[in-house]
Length: 296
Length: 281
Image (cartoon, each protein chain N blue to C red):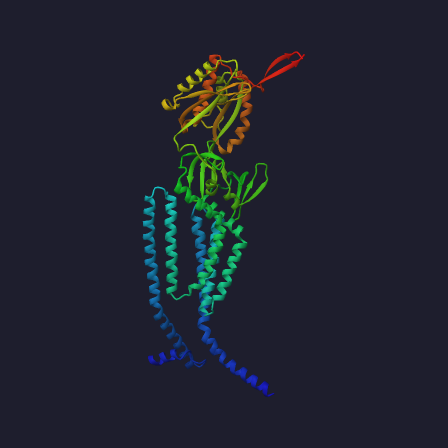
């Protein structure tokens, strides 16, 4: 069949239904031509869509690397957050490019869009709890109220900060329990940082008998405190005063300064040293006193 | 009769055009079917690949991997159906509106359940606990027996099963007693004010010797933690495997009593100094 004849055949729509061999050939020719026409008009679109995808993903990769590099340079943004932000940017670009490519192919994407945006809304509702943690996590990462390794109290839990990510903060308690707090809880409660200021004051009360010599007791306490090698000297030298005239004892308070990480060692060592010093110096630590009065 | 004959004639005419109509619509129907069949098989493969790929990530277990697979299957099938319907040249605007509002309604209705699933995914990725760990979740203590998409199951030490929704587990402070492998056991013992502190400490440390479960590095320690009302409070600190913690805790007291007795260290009763005075009334 000459070419122009086929053209007209296509232009005139499908041939009438005819089961004779002649009619079948005509039908076959018609659909063959339709297929060729479609592929001719479709090929450029396919190529264009492929190009868009290729260039788009290349751009996404470039943007990803540059965002990554930039966030790495900013000190208050750590690697976790940097990776998170740059990946989010990359996938957003790839998603947009994909939709663009699909629309070039002639697929009606508006309807798919409506469905997906509704789906996003549903997912957003499901994730709203986690999202508030992410928001709190951003705040904590930028404001940095504590660093990894600090000894802190967060929402009533004490320990060394082990890890901080966008959802959670992990502590290691002194007895080696892993405590994982949501960033929302951490942000909402008082944050107590025992490490950030470097040195700490350790206050210990010693109760002595009402009959003991206060001056001697103070001397013993100050001598033991000054002898401890972790206790700071000079401006921060040990300090003692009578802090309370208690029920059964005169309480003398010792205040010493030390590095934050030495706090517990200093405290426990001084308790023992002062007790043994009192024993040697004739100062007694009284038991609770009860006066029994007999009326005659 | 005239009416009947005209009706049959009309019907015959219509029937004659039916094959033509079929031919006219055949390509789009075929295309829709092809999209449906091919799309479905592609989506199936994609879903299986998702399962395999996510199963390869260490932190994602089988349940979660299959869950990801079914999400891909669901979303993909939806897209394929929409694409095949649009090949039939059906106006999809009304359909998408219905589906979209369905999603929003479902989203609201399933908000908490979906929140559990989302928390389950976060738990699976960050792994604050694994099956077999002793944990405290939502103020409940127990051993993790199952980590599901919706909820975490614990068994308490007295054998009660607890089912805690993943939102509750993730939304509260999580304590994992097994996460670091080792634990420090702290136990307090009071000794008399006139007992020798050094000898008491030596006695305390001696009870840890010869027990294979107690680590030698870091070595057990003893210290004065408080000068109490009636006793000097000593603390024994030792490191052990998290699994042995409770057993050692139950073994130590008896041994300390024996060691104090043989070393002549007194464990005091509560003390009161009583001063007697007589008043003439």
